[in-house]
Amino acid sequence: MPRPKIPEKKCDGTPKCVSYKTSTPAQNGKHCHTNCGHSAETLSGDVWCEETKSGNRVGDGKCNYWGQHKPSMPTKWCSATETCANWKPYPAPGACPTQCGVGGSSYSGSVKCLYVNGQSADDSVCYRQHGGNSRPGNPIRHCAAKNWGSGNCFVSAPRGQWGGCYNIYGGCNEEMREGWDGEERRECFGSGHLSCVSGYTSGNHKYIGCHRGGNNCYQNRL
Image (cartoon, rainbow, N blue to C red; front, side, top):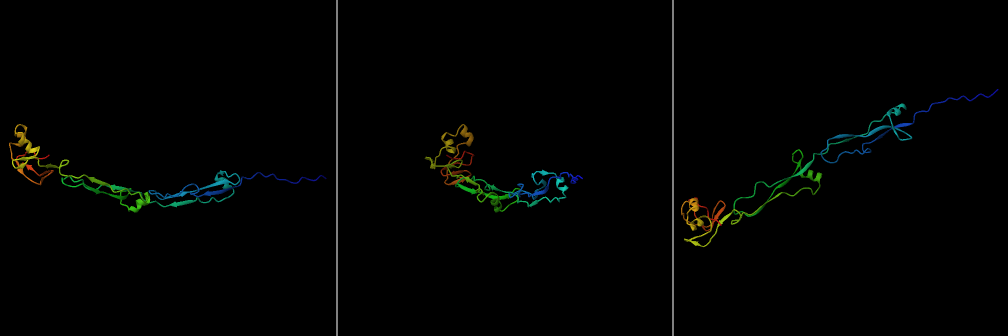
């Protein structure tokens, strides 16, 4: 009697081996912000089904076929960063003096640290955000001297003699020298008289010689 064949059963191939994999936000290149002006947020990682041998990503159904539990997605909570702030310069208050006889001077403004919403911030905030040497210098306003005899600070100075008073060029003396007629007569209303004055100041004029007033004549000056 011939020997019977060994019984055999042909089995279909099984799906490829797979498993769930995860990656953190940091592994995906996501990190909490360290600079100013960012709201709180949650960073997400990743979860996927991967073929064990090839390393290829496949649909979750491949892992579910084997009854694998899908893990939770890794996350990272990031707190809000502080409000941004900047240095703001303020010019010196007021303006340069306009009165004559004032020496040159400099006036210092100020620099403050302000949040971008306009609220005041401690200087340490701006130093922390912009660096230890970031604070600009105070704005400086340089005011030129308003010396007598320069610019529009006019001085009547001695220029010879006229009737016991100093005689200067321009102003009343010019009108007297030219005879007080024509334009000069109309401007100065007649011959007028000079008077001696010394150190008298009126507006931007300082008289240290002859001056004639009382009839709207041009004031004596250089």
